[in-house]
Length: 429
Image 1 (cartoon, rainbow, N blue to C red):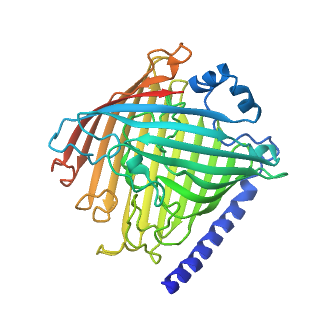
Image 2 (cartoon, rainbow, N blue to C red):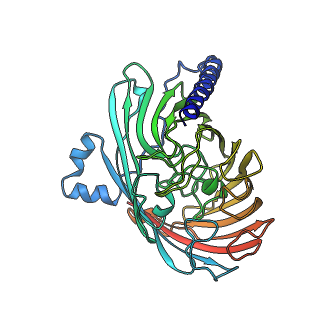
């Protein structure tokens, strides 16, 4: 075991050096616009909602505002119907919002945060803590944190990190647990501005989100804002869905490059490199593997065509030379997904998703009994019934139809096809 860990460290050092050299090579090209004033990294938090307004009436909001602390959250509940098979009452193959023919509380989320802006090049300290409760928590637990719970409804500390900025440099250092950086459909991605935006515009999740990306990561991440168009993140984590416990005791490299040439276009590339097995959530995971490193690549592109029409693209690819217990050598899985969002007006936005996904790892990524190829198409409408009302404008309904197909019988009905309908209600506060 000691020999394996040593080999992993040497491999990590070589690959990390390669990433650093790559950054040094592209740095002169992306810093030509450095004379421009850098802009903040992340979208602003939602405008004061019901919770902060209530705190204001109690005389508590002003002291929080003075120190930059915001408290907000959302509640989401939904209903799911499987038109193909009602034989199984548990979760379906597509995970998360998948308890058949019954209303569920997906999650209640409460956030407390203080954001920092590295572009100010001044010392500052911030933080973010997010707790959730609902059916989704059982699917998103990290190793060692609140993962011994049972039952449909559970709680989880989804995020808990501290941020620090550095005087004289557009740098932010983050330490703790955060929602993974990869993917078009991050667990809470754009939840406060989802209307009219293809990111998290649909109630259900893609195969890529469910099976080719981690849920959360815990470690240290350094962000450098090169200029208004480019930013680079690099750091180390404990692995996919690992937090207070690490199944293999080895670190991963995590890197991200963000390119936003305009307010209508954004391109994000994310890479993780390291030993990931096992990736499951919950306690009593099998012994980890430190010899076989996974390479996970993710690319996300968003283009706003008009004020009403937005298009998106998500690509994921995961490769590992071997997985303990599986025969056949190298394993790989991943897919490509296209997104469309068209806002008809303040009340309705049409959202669509078309996806192709392949598991060439004997069903390892999906949990299916065989390697298989999957296609899914989803069409939904985001409905804001009260867009002009102060608080009820935060209410969103998302009905959708979804069709899944596999080239092998992989769904829990034993069929190659699955037709589902689902709808949720989402209220931010």
